[in-house]
Length: 356
Image 1: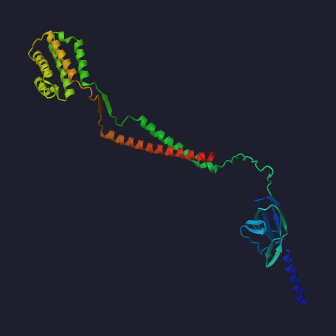
Image 2 (image 1 turned 180 degrees about the vertical axis):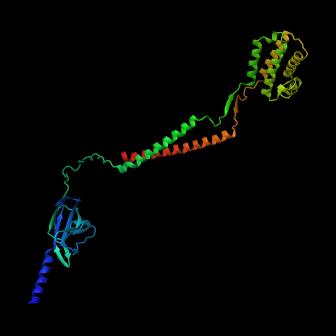
Image 3 (image 1 turned 180 degrees about the horizontal axis):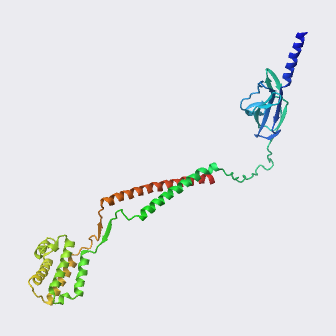
């Protein structure tokens, strides 16, 4: 009798555990268009400690002919009251034939025994095609604005801040260089008149002052010969101001013809007599010597001589050190300007991609 009671209790316990297992299948939409996707969720409610085994499908494997399984994912386990647990698995389905499909019950195995869900139906709808007017085409829909995303704009925003900092540094260095005293040396270019132009201008002054007719002949011949000496020194390149009249004539014999030199020799001879021997020349003699000087200058002038002189200033040690410091600042400014231009190009490219 005791054994009969134990067997009955064991049978009752087994039936109770089996009664605790329930399987449910649901689909989020009973119809879809060709190529769309629906989700079929298969769940099993079991006692705590039991492990249900769900059907497994390979990718693109057909659940039924015409219905493919794209993926399968396990959902979270939910603990229920009374020591029960609900486990589920979701299957993503698709189909490319417009028809009504019958989805048979799905089996879940618990402790070696299979439990089935209810059957489901899935209606696949086709896309209507105008077979009467196949030549009609509808234009594409307008481009839709994407919602604002900070992740898309953050790079351009932060790089813009970096660009502002770089530009601020360039402006600071520029003002620092601008406000300091100029240290970097600059080559000065001095424009000078041609030797014959300066000589003729001085002779015009002598004529304007009427020195040839004045009683102070020494001053007249001194200015006239000094003008000629300066012209000879700049035109022919020898130190005429430090040479005697004979030395000048001897030097000119290597440059000019004898006729012009003889006339110039007479001029210098008369000038020496007036300045050193108190000789009194006649007015017509003074005029002739003035004309001789003008003729000599006009016949020996050279128009293609350089009229510019480059002057390179000499810097002190402190000025050279300061110059190197300014050069370093200029190099840093150049690097920053290149970096700023690169940032502008990159930010512009990013904005073009975002707004295109």
